[in-house]
Amino acid sequence: MSDVSISRSASGTDTGGLGRTWVLALGTFAVGTDAFVLAGFLPDVAASLRASTSGAGQAVTVFAATYALAAPVVATVTARLPRRALLVAALVLLAVANVGSALAPDLPLLLVTRILAAIGAAAYTPTAGAVSAALVRPELRARALAVVVGGLTVATALGVPLGGAIGAVMGWRAALGLVAALCLVTALAAGALTPSLPGAVPVPLRTRLAALRQPGVVTVLPLTALGMAAAYTAYAFVVPALHALGVTCSGTVWMLSAYGLGAVTGNLAAGVAADRVGPVRTLTVGYTLMAVTMAAFALLAVTGARTPGVVALLAAAWGAASWCQTPPQQHRLIEAASAQAPLLVALNSSAIYLGISAGTAVGGLTMPIGTGTTFVVATALTLAALTWLAVSPPSPTPTR
Image (cartoon, rainbow, N blue to C red; front, side, top):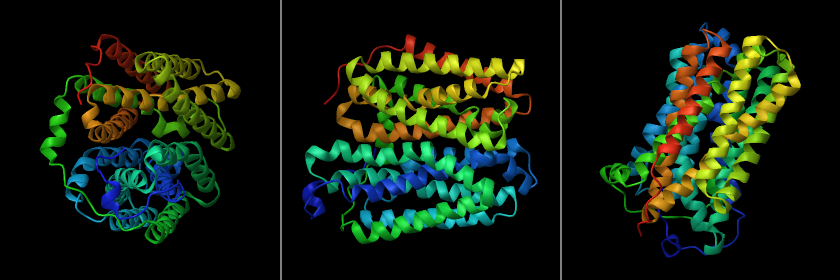
């Protein structure tokens, strides 16, 4: 989760249970909601800012791209800062940026505030992972990290649908305002409940990028980006895509909820499967499911079929296939270079957001052509991911 290492002795506090970790998870929930909530009402954003839907989709693209590029830089620059102060500052920046997004009068200003929000997210999420590990007993560290990562996953399941529901009633600006309020509440809670924790010795940016040359890593991280690009080619434009498939405005929230439920289920199941049958088999099943799902969506769009029940099942499968990628990919990275696991997991997070930004950019180009075209491209990208996985060499013996 993080490339910041905080030892128990360095923290100067007694570690214990998971209680305070839930506060950090509330922050990652806010980050996850902020990253994708605009996808729930892009047509409204476009109309309000007098822009095209694909143009409004750039708000999702720039957030993801900025997060991907900023995460290693921000981690290097802020490494020596006290952790509590960094957590609070990152959440305050997120809150201010979301207020700016909610008040943006035009698309350029919205994009600027989305960039600022992504920088806050890039500072918060890895730090929250490191702090959660420092706050608990050693035997609970894996669960603490799972709780923090779970905030992002639950945001996919609940945050985006809830944001869409709020946006439908009060407007998209109100939804972003509520995200800002959640960030401020979490900042207050983190400031009050998180003990004073020192920073760490910074890892030079050159060292971070050198990890990309590790045997095995050069094949794993590009697959992360490719797989997430396939998953998110249509997601940023999910509302117009669902409308093209015959889903009504009121039914959109339910379809997003089905996607979120699938995301949580797929993420949890993939973690278990990667341990039991191996990460490559788990990814093979996930990418196959995604290819079938994207192809089915394309067929429905091209034929003009109106089957809401089938769309709901496909939405759940879409979520499961999208979020089943992360556990096995992290498993493969740790197998390839266990000594650099924290750094590689952080780089994997950057690859995730790089893939999301690329996917939404591709979606912005294909959506004006037609929903069917977008899903055909998503299918092709998924097949490319399957091919990459098949031809990639097996992970080498772990380096320790």
